[in-house]
Image (cartoon, rainbow, N blue to C red):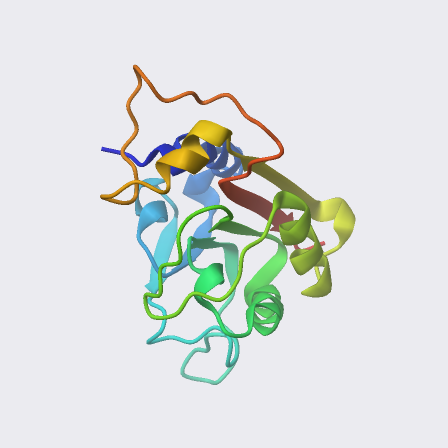
Length: 186
């Protein structure tokens, strides 16, 4: 069952990524395996912390940064010690016109696996991406949450499973639970 925290984000993110034409896309996912079912032309998974995106771009045998049309980082940027450096490294790994999709929690409990460092709203993600070298006009960011979902994040077991009968998916901009963005290398 899905967590109430990600229902709206996942629907939006799937639309954004499907609009890129996955069958023409060489994709790299940093941690997780959320993107493996899109039918990308090629799919590379790089696990954090074994591959530390903060220390530099992922490179091939020749030492040059690997190049991708899409890089996905779903629920990993909050665990990075140096997210701004990591964002610059992602930019170096994108082909011209390529995209970076990043999704992070905002109002959820601390989860130190291996560490927990940062939280961003949609505006904060946009600023992170700009500081990381992406042009503002190439960035789209969104967020979702509400008071009920915020309260559910205090329950155990965590994360709270989505209950269609009782969980509202209405958005309250003053209570973001998660944020996500896609940025294009222009």
